[in-house]
Image 1 (spheres, rainbow, N blue to C red):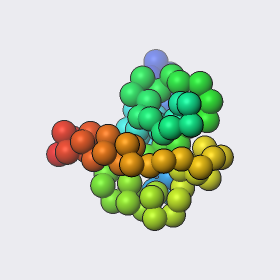
Image 2: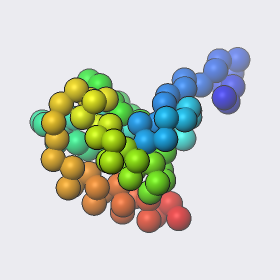
Image 3: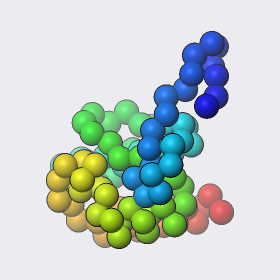
Length: 92
């Protein structure tokens, strides 16, 4: 965990691999009008699901249907998958 001005950075759990990571090292996924969106500012209201910027973590989360459980709902994942794959490609 990284220290900032004497404070510890908040830690979250990746819904894919279940490993811990700092808020700055994970992507936040939120529900907006019953659609999953990438919350790049990490400020959207409501529940969020946290994910490492890794294709493996995304695949694990999708296979386990982790977004529905974490966000307590049913969602169309097509747009999220396209957005996440694009974002992950830019990070490589």
